[in-house]
Image 1: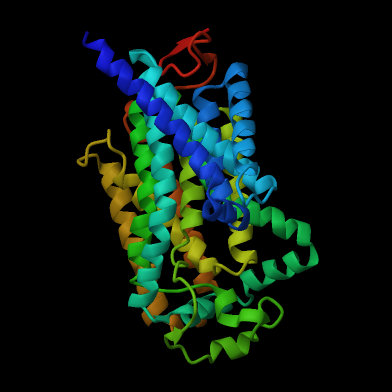
Image 2: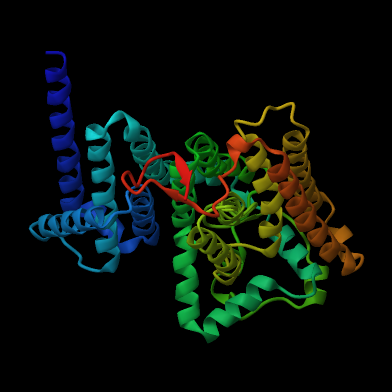
Amino acid sequence: MNSIPARILQIALTVFFVACACFAAQDAYFLHLAKAEYSVFTTFLSITVLHLRVRHTLSELGILALSTIVLIGVASRAGYFPPGISVTLTFLGIASLAILGIRTLWAGKSNRSVLFWGFVASLLLISLGWVIPPALRWTAIANPKAFDLYLYSFDGSLHFQPSFFMGMLYLKWPSFHWISILFYMGIPIVCTAVYGEYLIRNQKASYSVLAAFLLSGPIGIVLYNFFPALGPVYLFKSDFPLHSLSTNDVMHLHLEPIALFGFPNAMPSLHMTWALLGLWYSRGAAWWVRLIAIVFLVFTVLSTLGTGEHYLVDLVVAFPFALLVYGIFLFSTPWRDPWRLRAVIFGTAVTFLWLALLRFASHFFWISIVIPWTLIAVTIVATVLLERHVVTWRTGEEALPVRSNVQLDPVEPFQTNVRAE
């Protein structure tokens, strides 16, 4: 008798998930967002990546395709339906979310945990997309003036402007521009690809990965209040990237906070932070996951600069900030571990040191071209070396198993255990 109420609840929740998917598919406002905002369909597409990582079977792919077709049919009956690739990919993600929820309800005990955390991660990812814009709006209200001139001055001390250089390349090759934007907006894909790898191979460590990807955003928004900046495209507007000041003019530029229209989300670059975390966490992952992480890192560097959303120094400061996040969320490694402490202390100290130098010692970078380039090199090299030491010394609970001659049980594609061939 005890199983009857549970079965009724399972059926009720299954109907609820299906109803929610159908409601989203015919909601005019949601369909408009799916058509107009790249971030919407890339976020939902990343859910599909996670779904197929934990349930990588042909039958699951068929169920997903059929569910997507049904949602398109539901949407086409609504009064407002903008067809297109972005809307279709959004429906793909909605179908994946519903299937993950339903699979979690009806799965056995051995499989439910993986499916449950895949479903929860998907919900949290969507929720983050609704939370971050209001947080950025509040940051803009709290900081009416931005420090973009200070960042522009630093990039000028390199004796060229990297963002303007990449922006000119985008004007020359428009297709390269649009490809880069897709990678820029699709950064959640590398997050879910890497997280899914941990979820099926080392579920305990996956909690650290999930927390780092999700909470690095709110932590970064806190830092935006210490150094609000928007990016060169907001500073120069229509003059970007065609008209930049000469190096001599930048050297003698009067630096002061100025009012700019937009969200101050440049310093440090969260896109670069997520790309770095994806690369670091993908060590030991499947080759295609590792390749995704590398490609996204490369295009993140190119796109953040070429779109004018970031200065080069934003990407540099993302290195110690990413290491700080990486160290904070090494849950299975005790705080007394020296390398975890070094990662957190180094990441915090170097991040705030950069912010202080950029704000109060801009003239220091202009003493010699060697100084800014040396600081960039030292920051990146020291961060990478320290991260590798953390990986070497962290507990095995935090790492992925060695992948050579290892496969998942073919009977249960989403099983957490691994076995040697």
